[in-house]
Length: 233
Image (cartoon, rainbow, N blue to C red; front, side, top):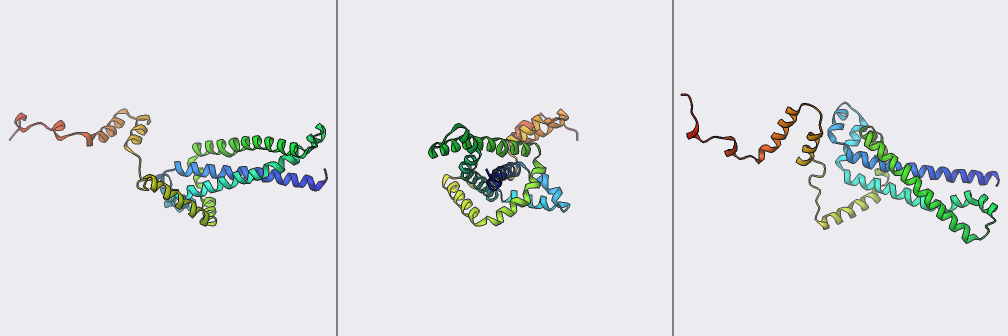
């Protein structure tokens, strides 16, 4: 193997690593920006933090930017699929020589099978599980870090993302879903779960939970008929 072939193999391996990281970026971006709340960014944006302002813009148009993350993930996966056979074919050439495998079809099949499983392993571990764990544990820092690059990618890829977004919206409307209340607030059930698991004074927690129950009360439950009241003049 000459120097040129070694350099070509090194470039291919760097391309594979870069595509896995590319995939990891979009996975982390998607999860962090879906999990983050606008209230977490409002104070930072008010103090002039540009990344926070960009993140707020993204979560205000989350459907379109989710399309951008999915477009990026798909590009990374497809590019990795293209690189699988030539990269592992080159890496396995010394092994083929040792095992005296000379059949072109056999070499190609082995390279594809090995590449497929290695590709799956890298994508699942480094491209999916690790970035998701980071986004869950460090949601705010991750959202701030990915906001500006994701916004650039969205602008550059806008024509493709616009088509994807419009197509998904058409399908959602056809299925009967609307955009109303997508990220407006927590539901009552979510608030009850948050309060139930919150640490602090039990009395204060019960007070807030009772306030949520107030709309289910009737006037008869909290008032006493006038003829049963003894009053002072």
